[in-house]
Length: 327
Image 1 (tube, rainbow, N blue to C red):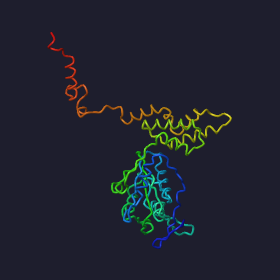
Image 2 (cartoon, rainbow, N blue to C red):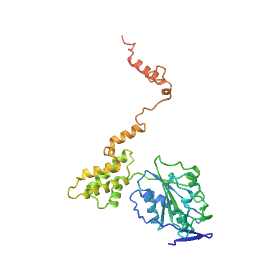
Image 3 (tube, helix red, strand yellow):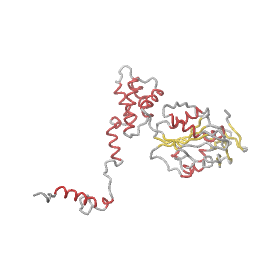
């Protein structure tokens, strides 16, 4: 690949494609949806820039990698953070050994120039100022303006983009004028038991079947209880378990002991009792609070003026009062 390119007299040094090769397992429909977003159906048509949402660790970036591989295009990944600046996203000046300024294109701009695919990973951690610099790229204009280098960079016709977003609290609200450009939303869910087992086997083909099944059952129970443990967590638990079993061949731990130690080390001691952890989470989110009516804000529960108490009292009176028709 060309190491640099000249635009309006400014030499840009290009980034290197991501060499990762992630295999997409299960949930084939969402991969089809992603590839459909990147299609053009006419010379006048433009590709879409979808946002891929879901909990951390379930394979959003891997999905984009699989899409890039199916399209036989280079993949570039840019990790968004809270302190990402517009020049970080586009072109960054670097002082060379000769004392001259060299302009380095970001992974995003490199994908634009070479016709690759860029994934803006965890895009909702990025501030509005940085998003504003991408507004013309994400609509029909398909270009960015680098204030640092003083040039306008147009996107190659083959350039494609997607944005991943985690569903957690440590993120920014993305402005509406950007969200309207990041369409459609593709939602990823936790995988089924069969798919999750296949994913773990793909990443750890040398793992013992018993430990694999134990980890999958743990993850599936966590998913059912709406806990935040992901497939990535399961992979880490498995890796640590296998390393602990192999660390002292003369005094090996039992499988159960090594696995429990791995769960505590990776996910915390509370993870050994998923039911209790889920119950505490529900309480912390207000799951044990009885829904309140409007009258609860103005009257005590036993106040005879409480609107709901009247109905209850009438019902009680009716049930306790003797029937006058009886002799």
